[in-house]
Length: 190
Ligand code: GRF
Image (cartoon, rainbow, N blue to C red; front, side, top):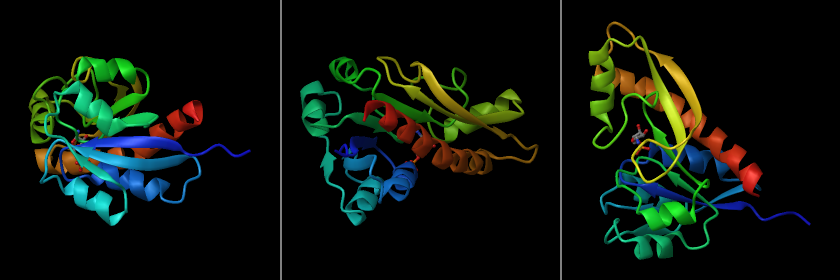
């Protein structure tokens, strides 16, 4: 008997290009189903991408409310934070320990932590003089960007880079790496 696809919930706050990479990668998959998209912001462009793909959406009133977030997650088996800017409440982290991942646009453990998101990350990488940057997918725990690293992909930092050009190069790597890690985890969970 064929197993049903693993139900994935995606948490978002922004434009949703990582969500789009997941929707594109799995729209005909028998292993992974993007079952719902949950946002911390009503204006998040990611919500429109979900609606276009026919995926149910939830807008959180209070992202800090564990009961509300658990209800929104419902029967999800795997949770993906894709450009989600809020700290996940501890009871939710406990419920999904080992089955909740986040993507971060730098090579953790460097250039991570509270307040380190978007443009700031890439500006900090350039200011440090680093010659490479990249993307990290890690398990989510009770502290921003600290959980066990599952996968990374490196990209070069070019002398002429600006935070915008570096962000664009890292985002391409994000869109390659995130679906790959989700598929690997779905194979383990499913
Ligand atoms: C990405 O760089 C992601 O790593 C970070 O937020 C950015 C948002 O991207 N957490 P998007 O909303 O998926 O386009």
